[in-house]
Length: 202
Image (cartoon, rainbow, N blue to C red; front, side, top):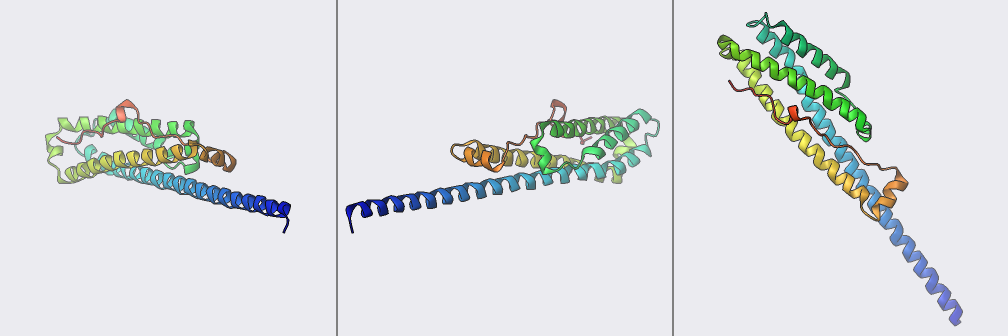
């Protein structure tokens, strides 16, 4: 075997090795991004589940309060309006997380509902007999638990988004992300009024 043939075989071997390593790196990076993207979707579903739980709990809470404070019509109107707005945006898809405007619309609707809920709970302070009602106390406990679960779900979602966004921005994975259509996702950023759960202890 001549020296030229040996050099050619070495060059071909190096090229094949580089191709194998490159394909392996691409596959590994791509699969990691897919996994992180799915984790974001999974955590977003949990956020929506908890908001849905709060959304479903509110009618029972309102009806219980109405039984004792029927003349507080403005508060009931406010919460009904806020709840109807949330109903229109409560389910946004994981793909919508790439659109900060849609996520902002979702957040604003949830913040509005949270504010109306806080006003409803403030009204109940004027009705000691309501505060002693067992049904109201049970709903109050469920609401407090739901608000805590919402906060945890938002935190878990933001952590998943951070991991995903970091992975697709690092070099050289960012090249693969750009080639494969992976884009950054928006984080959940609650407004100042929604930074804490509504006060539900009397």
